[in-house]
Length: 458
Image (tube, rainbow, N blue to C red):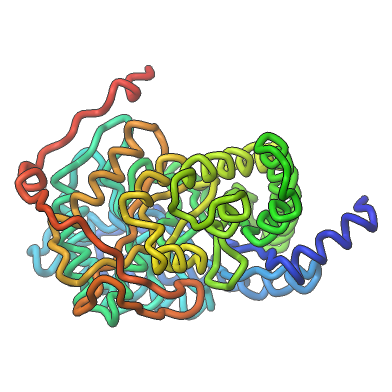
C-alpha cells in the first residue's frame, strides 16, 4: 500500500514537474495477414489493426482518469511491413511494387485514424546485411508514402554488431531522406523516418517502433518520461558530489518506472493483452523545464554542449538505467536518456547559443539512447553527407554494441540558424551547421563494413 507521502510526491511530480507517461504502444503481429493477393492483404491488414486496437484509446483514457497520470500518446507498432508483403508484390514491376507499398501505407494510415492513435510505426525494412527486392521497394516508396500519409512512421535498420554496416543501404538512405524532405511540407516526413543500428524489436517510441518477429500476437509496451522530475531532484542537490547525485537520480528513476509499469499493466489488463516492457528512456518535450539538456545544466554545466556534457550525460543515462532496472523486470526498448534536439527546449537554446554542435552531439550519443535525433540541417546538404552522418552514428552503435539512430531533417531552402516550428512534441527545429568537406568518395565505395570483433560472441 502506498504511503500518504508517496501519493503527495507523485501528485507533485505530475502537477509541477511535468511527469507523464509518454506513450502506450500496442504491438500487433501482422504475420497472419500475409497473402499473395494484394487487395486481400490490404483488407487483412486494416481489419487486424482495427479489431486489435479499437479499444486502445478509450482504455488509456479510462486508466488516465483512474490514476491521474497523463498518457501523452497512444500508438501502434506492427510487424515490419517488408516481412509480410513480399508474396503480394513479387510479380509486379519495380514501379508497380513501389505504388503497391504506398497503397499499403495509406491503409495503415486509414487504420490509425480509425482507431484514433497518434502514430503507427512499422513501415520498416531490416537490411543490416543485405536487402531483398521487397526491402528495396519499401525503401524506395518511403518518400511517396510520407507524401500521402499523416500518422505512419518508417524505420530502416542498416547495421548491427553481428553483421556490420550495410553501406549500400546507407548510401541509399541519404537519397531517400533528401527526397522525403522535398516531398513533404517543411520536410516533416523526415521527422517520421529513422535509420537504425541494432534496432530493438519492442521499442514503444516513434519513429522507430515496430513489433518484432520474436514477439507474440499482441503486447503493450510503455515509454515513460520524467526529465522535469529528475531536473528538480538535481537542482535540490546543488552541493552534492556526483556519486550522491547519481544515487538520487537512480531513486527517482525507480519511482518513475514503478508508475509506468503500474499504468502499463492496468492498460494490459483492461485490453486483455499481454504486458510487454517498460522503456526507461527520459523523453523530453518542448515544454520549458522538461528537458534533458536542463538536467545536465543543473549538474553544473553552463550550457549543454560545453566540455563535460558527455560525462554528465553518461552519469544520467547510467543512473536512469540502474534505477529503472530495480523497478521492473521487464526493461526493453531503448531505455536511457533521449537527446532529440528540436523536441528539447534546452537543446534548442544550446544550439542557438553556439554551445551545441553536430560534432558534440555525435560524441554525446556514445553514452545515451538513440543518436543524432531530430536534427535540422540546411536543405542543400548533399545526400552523401547525410549518408556519412548516418554511417558515423551506425559505427558508434555497432562498435559499442548499442542501439543508435539518425533522424535528420534537411529543410528545403533553409540555411544555418533558420528555425522551423513543427509544434506539439516535435518542437522547434534550429538548422545546425554541417561540415563542408566532402565524404562523397567514401560513401560511393558502398559494400559492407565487416562486423567488429565484439560481434563474435558465439
